[in-house]
Length: 355
Ligand SMILES: C[S@@+](CC[C@H](N)C(=O)[O-])C[C@H]1O[C@@H](n2cnc3c(N)ncnc32)[C@H](O)[C@@H]1O
Image 1 (cartoon, rainbow, N blue to C red):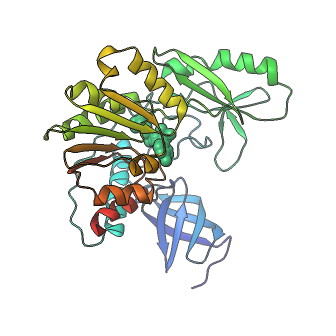
Image 2: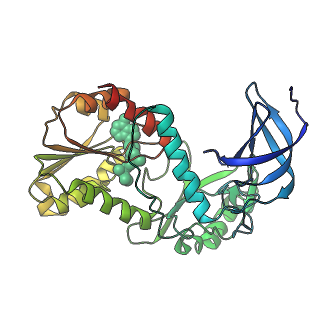
């Protein structure tokens, strides 16, 4: 069967794809449908057609899937920020878990892997401590889906209220400077360590504050998990690679008081932040070393030993191939890899099975 743009099809959504759309099949064609939910029976119209897949928009919901709900946010259907708010939280978690399992199975065929139950964020809303809204001619908000039109809002349900409470004053300041200018301003609003809102315009010279975990509630669980999973061995040294501002470095240093801990991070702003913390605490000065370095270069200069602990938390793109090969061939017995993306995790883990 051949398919063309504007063809109308009746489909059933099987599951969600990582980009946010639901996936259906029609004949041999895979169809991605934004704003759909698993189990939805839909009448859709093809909007994009590629060789092996198509994208389609919903014309009519013939029958809603069991996990479809009214999105709690009033602008969820237009705002480009959230694309799964029309799914219950349980379904969002199921779909994420399924994605991790299927991705690992695809990249590591024939391997038996043990999966623990998903640990959801303690909060489904009001958890983000950092956002990057946009401003254009009196409108402060977020880019709409698939365009750079700014959808104005004075709230964002997934953001901590301490931050959204600052929208009004920030907008007033922006109005004074940019109300009649045509360019769209990108800004970053974040809670600092005293939980006070801070903000800055983002531009070519200023690219935000560097990496920070956006959900401090879930981050607490993440740190506890790292400490628990590290607990069962005695180490000679601890390494925190892709260390950011020391999110894991400092809890590890406080937990394992007899060991030296060595951290590597590329972003000098984050290293500076960590250095300030080290300098202000006597007990850390002797035991914690923080290097501004690419992790691959750092590992070229470092000989890892069996009794070292390695924690690594690379960006979404995953770790460098050299880093993974070095770790896979090293004598280190315990490696904790914290991943931001299941595809790069699966790709990186392959090195361990090839070693
Ligand atoms: C996912 S963040 C993790 C940061 C930290 N572990 C945390 O929990 O806040 C990844 C970090 O890796 C850093 N990074 C990216 N590429 C790097 C590289 N090649 N070498 C060292 N650090 C890198 C980024 O600047 C970022 O801080």
